[in-house]
Amino acid sequence: MPEHRIVVVGGGAAGLELVTSLGHRYRKSREASVVLVDRSRTHLWKPLLHAVAAGSLDRNEEELNYLAHGHRHGFDYRYGPMVGLDRAARVLRCGPTVDDEGRQITPERDVPYDTLVIAVGSVTNDFGTPGAAKYAVPLETPDQAVRFNRRLINACIRAQTQEGPVRPGQLHIAIIGAGATGTELSAELHHTVRQMIATGLHRIKPEEDVRIILIEAAPRILPALPERMSAATADLLRGMGVEIRTGLPVSEVSAGGITLSDGSFIASELVVWAAGVKGPEVLRDLAGLETNRLNQLVVHETLQTTRDPDVFAIGDCAACPRHGHPNPVPPRAQAAHQQASHMVGQIERRLAGKPLEPFRYRDFGSLVSLGRYSTVGNLMGGLVGRAFFIEGMFARLMYRSLHKMHDYALHGGRRVVADTIARTVSRRPDRVVKLH
Ligand SMILES: Cc1cc2nc3c(=O)[nH]c(=O)nc-3n(C[C@H](O)[C@H](O)[C@H](O)COP(=O)(O)OP(=O)(O)OC[C@H]3O[C@@H](n4cnc5c(N)ncnc54)[C@H](O)[C@@H]3O)c2cc1C
Image: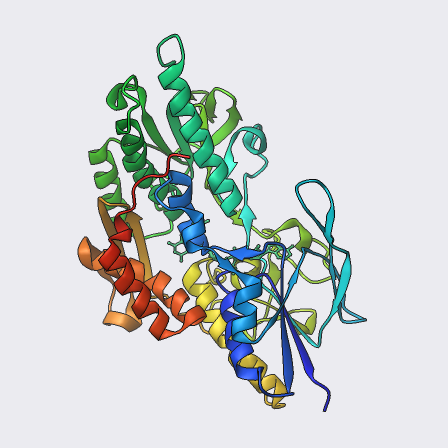
């Protein structure tokens, strides 16, 4: 029987866990081959991006190289962006890649498949707000997180060395969107900016010159999470000095700041957009596959796209029905992790000619890290029998466990234990802030 060609596009929280498992499963058999296609050469778990943006995490410490990981775990890696799809010929179209000097690295090429899994994640949704694309930095990729961090360091060094006093707005940071990403970023920045200033930038007075403003269109921060969690987090943030503005959407972003829908202006030269996600542009009209209004691929509970049973979608880019809920499965790391595990079983069933099984999302709760200050969360259902509010050390351990689960899926238990011991011994969790 010819080898079944499994191609996964996107090596993120969902796709990389999937190819790692499949690589192990089929590396020695002639039953199937596994190929990962990604437009990037390295993987960084996305929930760490706010720490990279704040400067408390160096991306190089956490990044994983696809080529080396594929070699170790039994899958092939193809470098390049998905730019199209021919469903009739069953080939994925990959665009070329070029280096910094514009020289081609990989040519345009076709990757044939028998089963295709699309796991290209999501992009920031700025809802077409004027000035957002030009003046606000999104947090979708490690490069964007590093770009924001550079802007922040440059702004502090400029303020330290300029002739006149610090201008109003010059060291203000406005974060648009108080979901988990924006909220975590505000707390992390509060700490790292002060640490940065304490490293010799004595002309800056943190209490007078630095403001961190968290802006949310909904009536409260963390609008998708339980009210108690939102209230506890807002109290902690206000206690630190983070300003919270809720109930008004942003109508414009400009070089000097943000205009809210009631016409009020918030001076801020550093703006992060962390409000909402949608499917990447490449999914629009992708070989006639169905998308929803957020440009996500619509899939059945089996994770198969509605118009092609050979094409699956998982993670943020998929709109997967959620059993017993009006809204689809949320775009979260725990959903990506669960869908990747379910997808391994689906492929095994597919190869064995057995019927596929529906995916059932289990919400284990939500955790929001406020950096070194605290962690808050609510644990749900299956884990403790009922919804449960947690805060502090226990919440922090639970928060770290989500990342550990991802590491476990990629590297196995021994490596995770060794890494945890190494971090504890070397005190790496207490990293100093990055200044370059
Ligand atoms: C700052 C931040 C903090 C977050 N914190 C949390 C949290 O605490 N808890 C939680 O549950 N969730 C959190 N999330 C959400 C979580 O990160 C996502 O839900 C999760 O990463 C989705 O996984 P994914 O595999 O679908 O996409 P991703 O992890 O984004 O991976 C997508 C992959 O596809 C590749 N790709 C994209 N386009 C193409 C293309 N055209 N061709 C080839 N490859 C492509 C990308 O390079 C990437 O490797 C956070 C997100 C952010 C941005």
